[in-house]
Image 1 (tube, one colour):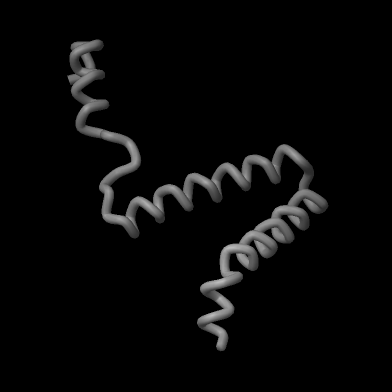
Image 2 (spheres, rainbow, N blue to C red; image 1 turned 90 degrees about the vertical axis):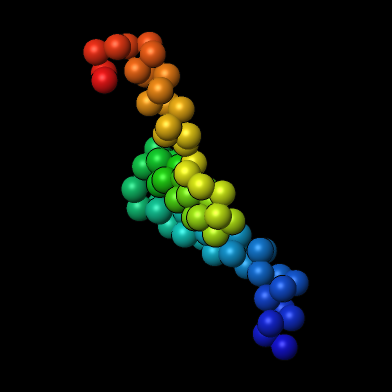
Length: 76
């Protein structure tokens, strides 16, 4: 019964819980602190989702370092 309920309403339940938590943080600390906290949660979610799906790193670090070395030779 719970598994069926979770498959049907799991996303909504998590959304309500997240909204409630962010609302409490907003009431305690203020709007900008809550917004920054939500940004950190979003970044954490993106990193976790990539790890779960085995996609590799969020940023292509190899290409980024190659670009920096080509652009600024003193970074080698």
